[in-house]
Image 1 (cartoon, helix red, strand yellow):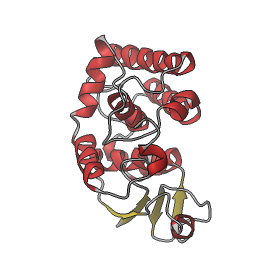
Image 2: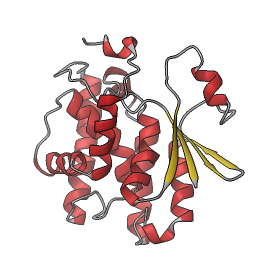
Image 3: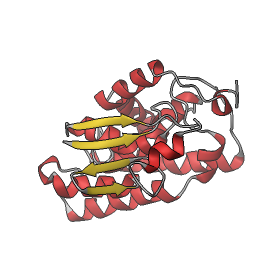
Length: 216
């Protein structure tokens, strides 16, 4: 049984990505939650990975850290799940989008931190954040339109899992979308994985005042 070490569902966007992927794809795993923002958080994470970050995937004697690296490993271990598009060109584009999400949009991350169970309409909006939102919206619109949907490349892939935290961020801060981008967000919000994650985030407790009071 694969083991996935994650942080709080409500706050940990990086933990969310492989969790959503595995849940949506039906890959069984054993979950361990390390509560973030606690005095023993770092020590508890280091028990699983010297990198000191979550998520962590453990497969027997193998430990894999970093959301995208974990997703890549899962794609290789479960080729029947088609976690990347089967077409080589689409696969390259999906990887490009996943990498852009992995390395970009720092303004959005900083001003609109993950907080699944709360709502802060309009909070955190700056010209730089608006530019990030514009780029993400154009990506969603282009690829959903090109593929015919309902996901970026038709079926759910790693690219969708990488953008899943942004889908929830846009809900938290009530970011207005239109057209294909809005339709994509609603498709993601109705997916079994995001419904399950949002439900668990609402009930998990362990609040972090530094985030909950940011716009409260």
